[in-house]
Amino acid sequence: MEKLYEGKAKALYATDQANEILVVYSNQATALNGKKKSQIAGKGALNNEITSLIFAYLNEKGIPTQFIRQVDEVSQVVKALKMVPVEVVVRNRLAGSLAKKFDQAEGSPLKHPTVEYYYKNDELNDPFVNASQLSALGILELETSDELEAFALKINQALIELFDAIDLDLIDMKFEFGWDSEGQLILGDEISPDTCRIWDKASQQKMDKDNFRHDLGDIIPVYQEVAQRLRSYLTK
Ligand code: TMP
Image 1 (cartoon, rainbow, N blue to C red):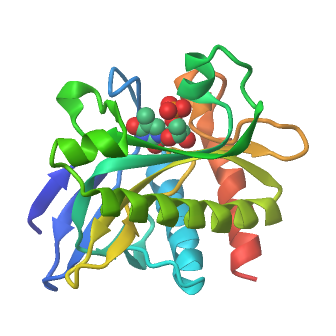
Image 2 (cartoon, rainbow, N blue to C red):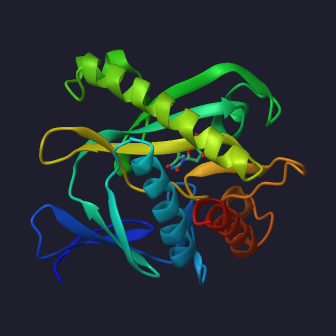
Image 3 (cartoon, rainbow, N blue to C red):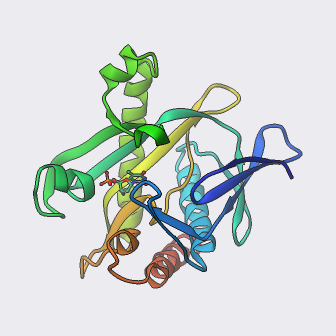
């Protein structure tokens, strides 16, 4: 199969269907924009399963995603998309870079969810940008930014409800979007503990990649716990 792209945690391959691609999840974990790197056995399979379960749930709720079907332990078939060149971060509580920016405690409440854009460019370290800059630089029309914001907030709400049902608090998350062959804007990439902060409701224990980023502990047992809770809630 022709390899179309190799990212930090996934590789994309062409299929015999023009509008479908195969995504293969790897065991590579990275942090600090790729400066910290490890191979963690089992991570690819867990993120493939978690993303498959979550995207199938969103598809069923009428939220259009790139996901078509899981193929095997580490791969899934998805719709080919023309990717929007920004990452969209939504936050429900203060953590990570925003907690650091304002020197406030992680976990502090926010009055309402925030939506942030980061321009996807490795050489520039994915800088923060706002809708006005994106428009002025000719990267995204203002209407598209508005559409992304509304879409991201809607997905956030659906995910808060999903995670709440399995006793997890959704602290923040990163989305990527793209246009399908009909020009419709849909959710792409992955939603996993690599791309969200999720804390156990009762203990407030981190159940996500912060365990790797900050050397707090092994990520496999916590990713397994997230997968197990999703599996038993969504496939019963
Ligand atoms: P941040 O607090 O580091 O800005 O991250 C916010 C959320 O976005 C967090 O859940 C991790 C996720 N994220 C990614 O998935 N990829 C990225 O490149 C970055 C910077 C954040």
